[in-house]
Length: 119
Image (cartoon, rainbow, N blue to C red; front, side, top):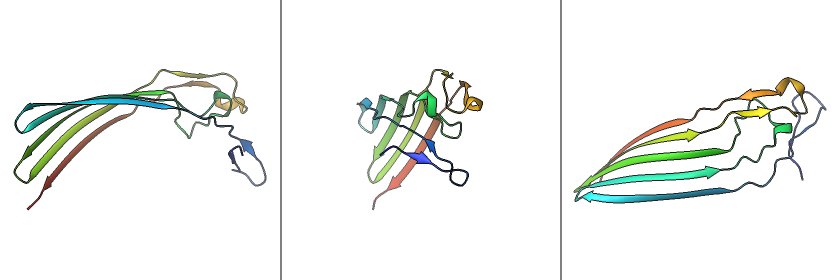
């Protein structure tokens, strides 16, 4: 059953999302007794076709590169990581709503920090 959205009363806007795939790989390297470095890459295909893209849903094929560093010592763990989304400009020319046609640029960056202590 296709997804649909009813923003204004009985109007139906078909979404027609398709199946999509994701691929990812990562590695870690313990370079010292208490330290570990991590890196990874994943690719996520968008399920949203250009003709039903809505500007409120930032959907684009996305590559994600990430790096991280972890420290562990008796009872304490600390991690820091950075992720960067890699996007191309999405050019929409065939949208069912002509007002949504145009060029879309997406940016996605994330920094994560964690600390835990076990006793």
